[in-house]
Image (tube, rainbow, N blue to C red; front, top):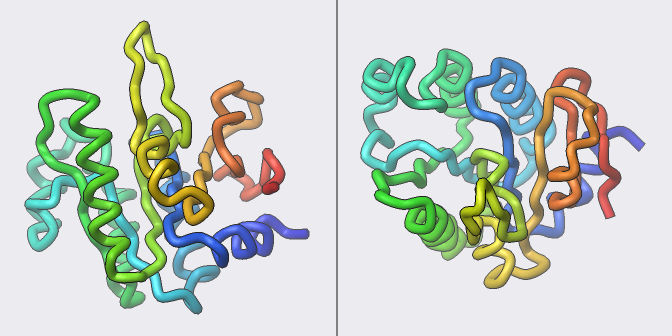
Length: 192
């Protein structure tokens, strides 16, 4: 069964699908644009991005101000947003200027849950740490991730998918329901 078909089957039964990726790559935004536009066109979705809410109506300004400073402020993410908008896909920005990692994770979860009240299927694009459905430990810092906060609330209505650029078998992949290689679209970890 093709990756796209397996992903559609996973997405059908979920309210929130978190795609965890590495910011600043060229392939991931291209993969996401193609997948969302081509494969999710029959769903009523909103795409939530880890970009400060204050730029929701000032997207050009965000990319001009953030160039070289913010990991989402690249030409590739700009093109992702433009392609989604040109295909009439709704977009929400869910980040804020936060002082701690804990506050960031809680804020992202709160914003996603606020969107969830509208009963639309939400495609969330964040860094892979935020998307992990389990708390993680990074350099001795225990992080209750956005994904782990949402998992407690949404339970089986949440899917967590990691996007990678190689097949290195990173053990962090075990946190996710599915792992997709964006270079070739191959599903590296089978969907349960």
